[in-house]
Amino acid sequence: MSIKVRYFASLKEALGRSEEHLEFSGLASVGDVWDRANPNKALPDNSLAAVNMDYVELNDPVKDGDEVAFFPPVTGG
Amino acid sequence: MCIKICAEAFDPWQAIQAHQYSAKELAGKFGATAVFIGTMRDFNDGDQVKGMALEYYPGMTEKQLEKIVAEALQQWPVIDVLVVHRVGDILPNEPIVLVAVWTSHRGDAFDASRYIMEALKSRAPFWKKELLESQAERWLVKNTDGYY
Image (cartoon, rainbow over all chains, first blue to last red):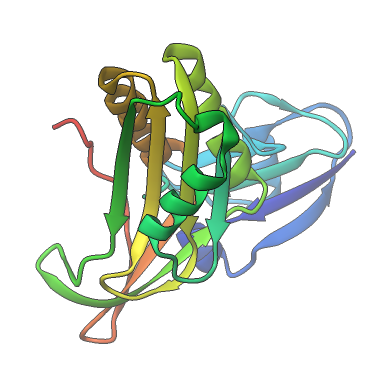
């Protein structure tokens, strides 16, 4: 399955990229997407994750065509 | 209901006036308007701040703001809501966020506007990066709790 991965703010700067496309075989979780996209790099504490623009937990599943996003705590307002 | 992401500086008072006068459903119906405006300071954490870059997640930001407003509408008898949030490069003294809520009675206006503002602070995907007087750049790490 094909997953679009996006990063924002300080996480985007730290990784040096804002988005990428990954091909997975079989089922995967949001956490698996991070591990696959960033081998040997832990997701920073307090990071948030979203699938298709809704907040999710790292053990939530992803499916073909999903947009998965990782970003730091939000600081708007 | 109106939710706007704004890449240019805006005047919150003009936005409220324009919205109120153009919203037909408000005429004669509202008795209370609660307004919150967040404005950029020129200091933070003991440092002089000369500018700020506000990043967002196009699509998700609007989606989350719509959810937050919908939650407020379920909890209070709200007649109308206007939310405007700046993105891009911001200077001290420029407004960052406007939340205006129109209701029949004041308690609902205060409570619903507070709810929307606090939920926005913790859930709407915006991120601030400060440009300090020293030329250093600094991402804000976390919003403070508005109820402390």
